Amino acid sequence: MGVSIDSTHCHKAWAASLGNVNFPLLADFHPKGKMAQDYGVWLDGPGMSDRATFLIDAHGVIQFSEAVGPGGQRDPKAMLAMAQAL
Image 1 (cartoon, rainbow, N blue to C red):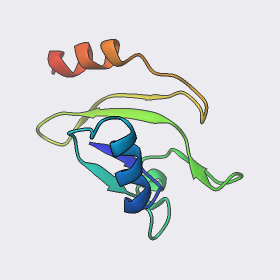
Image 2: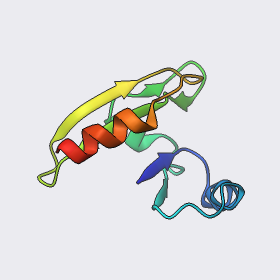
Image 3: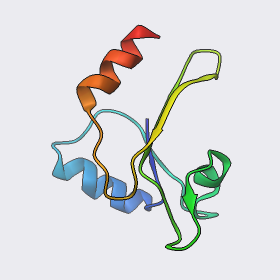
């Protein structure tokens, strides 16, 4: 699942621009950033969420988390390997 503070309209446009991604996108839009705040990745100054990844197991326990900053990059292959290891 992907989560961002963007609206569902932005998510639809983003998904279409990538060839219609096939995973759910959640809009953390109202109240803006509530989920990001709950996960500790809300950045008060700029009023946005950090770019972060959380791998959550079937029991709802966070097994891995990483925040890379708003402009940061993540390694999709490494994330897939971690998810497959759960």
